[in-house]
Length: 102
View 1 (cartoon, one colour):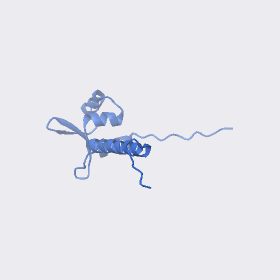
View 2: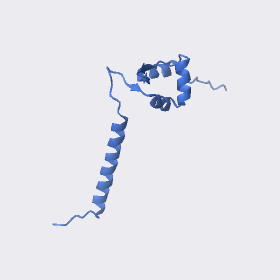
View 3: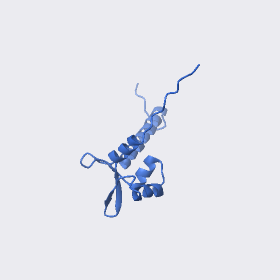
View 4: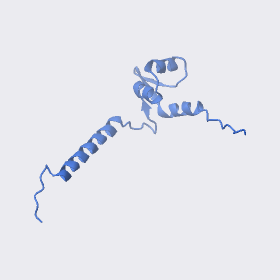
């Protein structure tokens, strides 16, 4: 069975599509990768506002009012990921259980 496999072969096309998808995923991972610095990840203004689902202006107000900790480094504002997680945990309110009364 010495069959010539051409690029038009459906299996080859699927393989190419899968490889393109993997390449795209690898780009996404490398573009969004933030290396740790001393075991800590730092997020930018934009990343933090997206993560918290708030505007950058609201984030600025939180900074100005002392509601959110930040690092100012050469005019660049950074936020420690662990600080954000701690704030979210502190503000967490679990759902209350309602009793069925009969």
